[in-house]
Image (cartoon, rainbow over all chains, first blue to last red; front, top):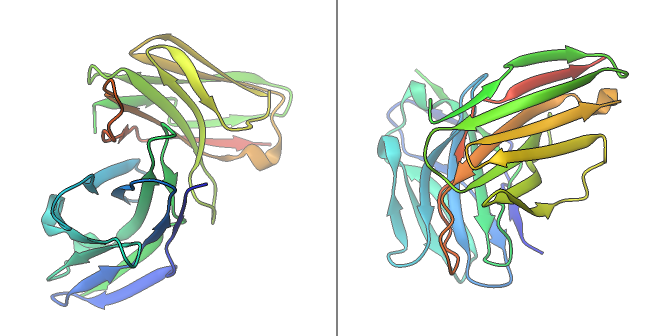
Length: 113
Length: 116
């Protein structure tokens, strides 16, 4: 069975500082990894994904994520946080034995001015 | 965000009511999904349709009944729900290719359901 862990319920960072939102995963085959963001009363918006290739994936709004196979991690990062980045972030994984995504429980990111 | 639309956005229903949630995708995708998002729980995959055939049903109670009449529309029919079914119901779509690739799923804004 596949699973995703987001160990932090909330991450607090000051505007302008770098941010990291952690994600670890477990799948039986090659992992396909995704990050989504959810703003209040909205659906999930796609940020980035890792399928194969470079371990550093660049996505929307200046976000990037680093795939680490040995640590089974896919942490989301941004060099300089904005107040507008405050939202709920979800990591998700899919292996090719299934069609749907398995999501982590989400991490609330709060960026203070 | 207008690629996947959901109606209604909010719904309040009693336990004896019958209602339906509607999802429409304007992206030309061939796969559609229903997810349930409850407070303090991970998103749960409920149903998957690919080429209008149900390919995944994750042990969802029979009081939830999906319908996919064509590749652009997906319904979730609700009857005799329980208060614990109150949640945000999210629809998503993707373009799944032969041989299997992890194509991106695009989500609608959700229907906020309250069961009294």
